[in-house]
Length: 304
Image (cartoon, rainbow, N blue to C red; front, side, top):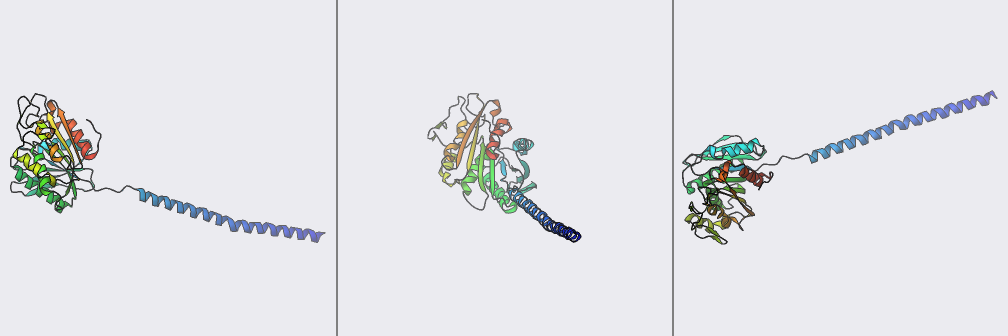
């Protein structure tokens, strides 16, 4: 009897020991599998996070060209307003001497937010031909020294005329940055004639101006050189004083750009602003003009 009892006790001990060994053998393995799975999932999430992290894009700078008799203050206020509302980053100021030499101040970061490049002509009453050459020098400088491949441009008054001439002159020449977007503000593309009653020999018809200035005729003659990728916004001003002008440039002269650019470029849009703040030298101080230009150039909220 005692012998059977001892044998039963020994068998029970063996069974308990066996379960203990089995438990100790499998439990760590189970934990190891969970740990490995968690680590793998963590690494996968980390990899996915790296893959989806936004990559900084190279910005397209915008070149600002003032008009006849213009200074740093001409478009400086507009640039300052764009900077204050976060639309742009002020970058370079490039001053061109009368002999075409370019001197530059400021810094340029290709990853900055909508960088601006303000161009100032020391001889601010020079001809369109000279200004065109100076714009060429600026653009070469941007391409060669700053490795800028694409630009936008905004020109007020004669600055817009000289930009138009520059575009037709260089066409698709790879020596210069590719021009993506162009804003013209009060540009006298077909001369400076204004009628007291709002009527001139240069008024527009459905087919173009009734009469063309020599400069406009050249623009029309060479418009096939305009790159087809270009997007254009053409802004005119009408003070509503009966002259159908901004006081210096007729609406007809400014909007004659339609017949230069339309059907030559990727897109052409025109807008006429009215009232006392649409006077020639106030167009670049007009908040509505700011908004329209900013929306076109950088995709901010549009206000018509």
